[in-house]
View 1 (cartoon, rainbow, N blue to C red):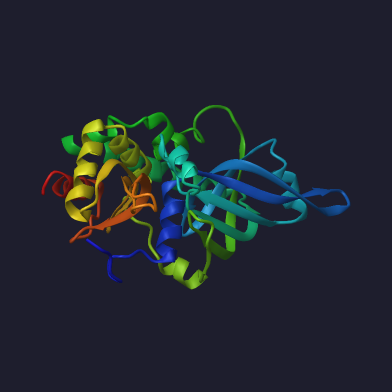
View 2 (cartoon, helix red, strand yellow):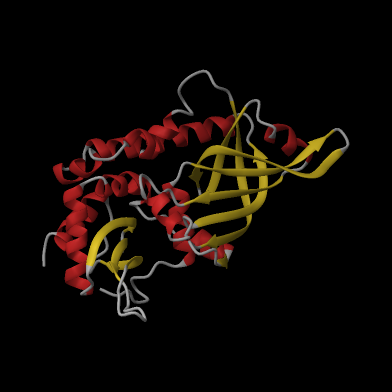
Length: 297
């Protein structure tokens, strides 16, 4: 079950997947006044989606970013891998953070027809994801029904941009550099050509809901524990899914640690990677592969 070069995601893949899985990030622009740019930074959480490889960001009408970018278009955009439910607190307890992407570039406002095109593309993305959920099989629906969709569904959160009377300015983020930051704080600069060539995982838009649904199910978590014991030969007493993709899934398992100096052993949280023999190109195939692995043995 160990990964090889063919089954391990590249850093460019990981960056694309994080951007495709989330719907909000932290936008940073340089505070400005009539005299020009200052050294202070304004930060706020904004919603976005990716169109043609570039984040398209919806900034509320009264947000200071709209003034700042008139004077200076330079900015940065940070997006974390979304961890629903108990996962975020568990990672914090083992001194880890969600992996994340840090982008530097220019925050360019869209005008006229380009705004309408961005909105139409957003509507198309929402419709596609909504249809995929509606047409899901019983096994997929069973997982999703356990999830808190109001906080984990990407399309439902993006739909809020189109509903109501709130006004936004739409920006395109032109990327000049990309950095991948892992859960331990290690960084890796990612070549922009690699980012452009990489394709977002087809499971990414649904990953947060699927992970939450799996982790909220006691039966599925018991199956994950059994999976750790069977395939890893490790004494596990708890397990959660950390991330999913077409190549496999990552598990945070509570397993018996090494023997201490006094002869005792304690349980500790440890990450494990499980890979599929065949890539899962949609949520149906992923759930089939997951059931095959966690219900067999």
